[in-house]
Image (cartoon, rainbow, N blue to C red; front, top):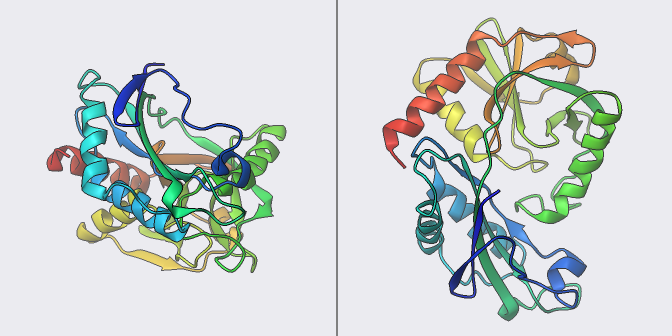
Length: 280
């Protein structure tokens, strides 16, 4: 892997030391981040990812030391260090160095890392229904994309892998489908698309929002509503959206097999066309 990180006003190759054992972030989990993609010479919605990072930092009581436009420019400087055709992951972060339980906002630090990471091939993903659930805003800072949420995702992923699957559907406290351990989820029936309505238990993903808008612009009905697990089992097709794999088909859900369907293919094709049309 080739990686470049901007930290303390300079670019560093590899995996530079950016925090230590006495800092707040590794001790008390004050790190927020975002993830964007560059591929095939484009970086779709990079500006929105940078703005979401700033919003996450504010949610955590941090003092964002750079605004979204400054973060975007640094990210583009990092992208320029790679071949134009490279598939890259772009990960800006804010965190606190000091504070006790709550953060000291004046100690806020910033970095942005850009590194090569292939987009997974859309060969299909297998899912279980996890026993672990997503918290709501009154239980956790679910309005931020933050490192502290990922141990919960990790145990759902471990549960899935122990059963021979790749990922997991996670419910909210009321038993409705929230999202996957690592992505947002959609299903289709009778040429209409359905996805869980944002209810404070998951991030309203940037790729999710983009795909919904693109499908609706094509005249396809997209319904955001409460989803039960049986709705997924009875679907014609299921697919996911997220920054890591963008738009990907689900081919197995517990004991039910699926084929990549026309709504998945339409969503993926529309997203790729959008990415190249905007030349972000």
